[in-house]
Each structure stands twice: as structure tokens, then as C-alpha cells.
Amino acid sequence: MKQKLLAILVVASVLVMTAISCNKKDDEMKAEDAKVEMKNSIQEINNKVFELLAEPSVQSLAFLSQLMDIDIVIGKSVINKINDQPGTIHLAKIKQAFMPRNSFKSANDLDDLNLGIYVYNFEIEDFTLEQESETVFKVTYPADETAFGNQKNNAELLVENIELAMVVYTETYYDSWDNEWVTETYEEEVPVKFDATQKIDGVTTVSGSYDAELNPNGFPTGATVNFNADSYNVTGSLNGSGQSFNTKHTSKKGGSTIMGHDIDIKYTSDMEDIEKLSGNYVLSPLKVEGSVKVKALDDLMDQYDETGDYNLKDLNAQIDLDLIQTSKGLKIGGIEFVTISHPFFGDMPTLAIVYSDGSFDLLDEFFDFDLKSRKKY
Image 1 (cartoon, rainbow, N blue to C red):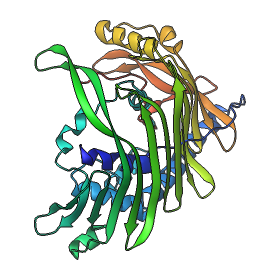
Image 2: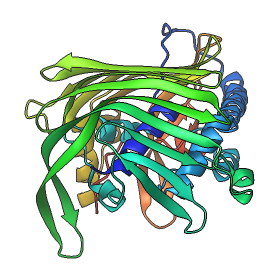
Image 3: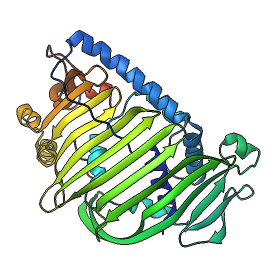
Image 4: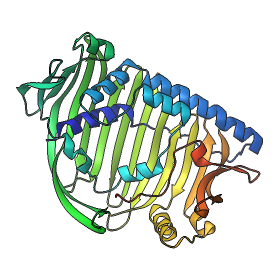
């Protein structure tokens, strides 16, 4: 059992899963007002993310990830990066997360911890196993750099009532060294159910549960998540059957929703690709709402990568996305492909926010936002 992967799932459940919904408005802002609103909204998003990352439980989980050598960076360096590159929406990553065969290959270097009770050992600067277990993972550790300096294990992460499932799945990726496509089959024991709590100085700062249903190939067919962390509440769900599924996540601070999504997913008949995504993704006060014909867009972009030729009309026919200011219920603009001139690659299609007067700002000036599914190299 790759137990560090389990810790990743706990951290990710607390920090990532979120959702909101609101009615789509036909009213569209004037271009000059929309451009001002974008800057104001991005600043508001920065403030909310900064507040989340500054929470003691989040800082402590980030410190634990460093001690466990897990590549989850959620500390001050990320806050600084957000200030430099505000706002992130990854539709490509959303697509990757929903793919039928979820890959755990990246966790292959995390298999040196098993279920059990661990304590951080300051002498060897690593975790030592105090007691073996088949249903519990508990780690006691210093909550932050101050506790680490004082050699004080004042925090604990407890994952209990763990249920595991064995899944078998295949993954196809491009091996650039051998210059060929490779298909490999993996067998993985993964958690499908657990309860988790985090305590700092004896005070519970995070509590919640995770429950999932997987088919024999590891494809999630249902899931529920509910976590409370400091002043935040996180809930999530996945349900559906056949080729159609829906996922919802909501993250609230107090009674206010701060982030989230409500997305319908339609897979191709062979369940190998996503045919269409529709719904909304929110970083309050901004919401992207609409639909993307993912497979068709993927094929067109692959064709563009191979030939260098593209048709802007064809690309835009695969997306129908609006950017909305949720608190005002007004459309800021549409998200469309536009042509820009690159100094090295020449004319190329790029996503942009297109305002009511036809002017636009490139989307990546505000968001790290990409509809193109990237191959694994």
C-alpha cells in the first residue's frame, strides 16, 4: 500500500475539492467596465486564497508534506506565486482528473510507508514506525518550523476506518526515449473509504470523511467527501452511470462559498476519452460557465500540432464558455480562441476573454487556463 498516496488524498480532499452554482445572466458589461472588474475580481480571489493558505491547518499540512517529501507546495512560496500569477483555473487538469483510468504511477516512489502509527524522529530526521496496523494511519509530527526547531511533535494526522480496494488498470503514454507509445498494466491497492482528523496542540483543526465506489479498473462511479478545516467546510460528490456522470464540490468559509464546480461529464462510448464537459467552475467572484466538446477540440488541436494549420471558426465551434461576475450577475465576456502572432511560431490560436466591443485580453494573463489535453512524455 503506497501510504504517502493516502496522505496526499487527505490533503487534496481538504484543500482542492470545491463548488458553487448561480444562474447565467444575459446582461453583459461594457468593455471598459469589464476590464476593470477583471482586475478587481482577481485581487479578491488573491485575498481569499491567501486567507485559506494562511490557516494553521493548511500550513501544518503543507509542513507535513515537506517532512514526508511529498510534492504538494501550499506554503508561503505558493502565496508569493499567486501574487505574481493571480488566479488559476485548469480545465485541462479537470479533464485529466476525470479520465476513466486514473493513474497512480506518479506515486511509485512513495511506497516506503505502510499503514501504521508513525512518529517523527528528530535524530534521524525521518518517520519511524511505532506500531503496525491494517486499518489506521497515524503520524505525529511538528506542526510548523517553530515546533520543528524546538523538536516538539505537537500535531497529528489520523486516518482511520480505512477500506482498501484492489484495482487493475492500463495506461498508455509516449516514451520519448524509445520514441514509441507504450501501454502498461498496473495493479494498485487504493483507499475507497476513510475518516480523517488533524490535531494541533490537542485541538482538532480538521475532520472529515471520504467514501468512494470504484469499478474493477479503478474508475470512480461514485464518491462523497465532507471535511471541516478551521473556518472552512468542504463537500463533494460524484455520481452517474454509463457514459454520463456529474461532479459537485463546494468550499465555504462561514456561510460564503468561495470556490467550486458543478460539472456534467460525458465520456465517449469506449470510455477512453471525455466527449463533453458542461457546467460551471468558480473562483468567487468569477465563474466560467458553459460547455466544451473535449474530444473534438482535442482532435483539432492535435491536427494543429501536426500540421501547423488551424481554422479559428472550427476551434470556437467546440467551446461555448462565458466568464461571469457572480455577485453582480453580469457577463464579463466570452472565452474564445483568437489568433496571436508569436515571434518564433508565427500565427497561433490562443484562448482569450473577448469583451462586448470585440477587444480581448489573453486568458493566460489572468489564469493558467488550457483546454488542450497534454500527452504524457
